[in-house]
Length: 375
Ligand SMILES: Cc1cc2nc3c(=O)[nH]c(=O)nc-3n(C[C@H](O)[C@H](O)[C@H](O)COP(=O)(O)OP(=O)(O)OC[C@H]3O[C@@H](n4cnc5c(N)ncnc54)[C@H](O)[C@@H]3O)c2cc1C
Image 1 (cartoon, rainbow, N blue to C red):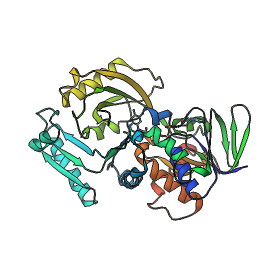
Image 2 (image 1 turned 180 degrees about the vertical axis):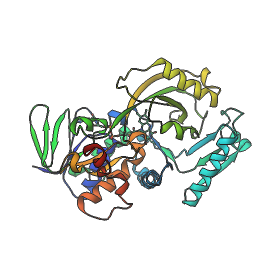
Image 3 (image 1 turned 120 degrees about the vertical axis):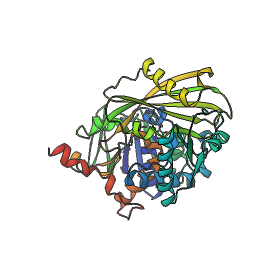
Image 4 (image 1 turned 180 degrees about the horizontal axis):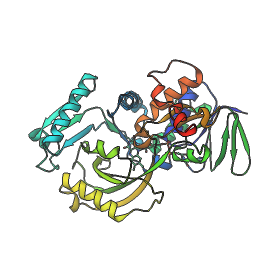
């Protein structure tokens, strides 16, 4: 039977879109070349964080974080959802001023946030270096293990009976009425949604996506050593570098007691090898904030690739001239776990023709058409 909607990709974004459309009563087929929750979803950190670099990023991440908080009671222990909060760390007076501005901006928009001066920061996170100037705590930010949530969305969410998942199915081309697989099989559908992360470049080659490589390292178990997801305030600058290599301190307390340490950003490479100089630079940066770090036992390091668009926002909506009649949900860069649930709501509203819960315009792929296709 032909599905109402066919989704390419069973990462967190494809899975969220499938669950949303299925809950609306559509019969959904999901195709993935590998397994559920692979790709960037398996490589990433799973920090659910409100980011405020632009009004559009704020609107999407804030709305999506609320959707995660609503979903959390249904998730299982193995989905490792924890409401640990984010603690933005100010290393000096300049960053302390930045923390104060960020606090004012969040407060004005109703996001619960508390400024911590140096003694309060130390009481809150004693493992941080004593030299830190202060911090900003965002109480409702959370963490999750996204690969198992992708599996939950596809197999156990309220509409899951309407979802069929086919693994080991590599899609080689897409059009408005279906897709073609690597073995030549044609799979038809009412709607075709490209949600395969960076792999969207192969199916829609004119898309303006760029791989941004990231390194992560996980330690042995040190329960209680840190309590919040810790990020340096300089992270925001680093996250938006468009060239070269940058690192920023980012540490996550896993529910297992392990510390997940990030993060790096590199352009112009698709080589997944762990690069020792980049890993060393990232860990040195982290040790500046967490002096105990060099005494901890690191047990595994790996890399992943974020799918970055030119303006740092995802592409959600009709592909337009990029691929007529096809829908896109890709380009989520370093925020795709956070923004997956909102992406699904925005895409579903466009497909079924209802009013989206937040304006869709900033994320429409058409914003790049002039630049990429007509220039
Ligand atoms: C190091 C790192 C840290 C990160 N940290 C965070 C974080 O803390 N918080 C956050 O919100 N986000 C984070 N991210 C970003 C987040 O992980 C991604 O934005 C998100 O996982 C993207 O999900 P996706 O479903 O779009 O793509 P993916 O997870 O890449 O899934 C794509 C799927 O499509 C399949 N596929 C590809 N091509 C084809 C094809 N031709 N045919 C069939 N199937 C295909 C793949 O097998 C894969 O399963 C991080 C990313 C990295 C790399």
